[in-house]
Image (cartoon, rainbow, N blue to C red; front, side):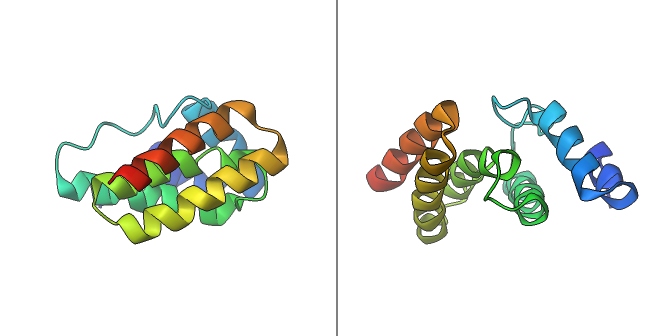
Length: 117
């Protein structure tokens, strides 16, 4: 099993410290610490990573909500349209409620991609 720096941080630090490390790694512009998925195994790993991060952080706050568009995108690539649709709707509503303009714009784009798929 390949343990990443973020996995280690999750195991060794409090959720608040993990959220800070995750925010530093992701940087709000996409999962910089996650390489592009060259195959289905890597894509499923990306989905698993994002699922764990959102579960730990919750999607009610900025850190977790900002990961939802990336998770929707990965789910679309994995052809999990039903789950992508539900999360896209959640991403749009949560980002609007939190006033996260950049995340809201990205969530809206991802939701439109879901509708087109």
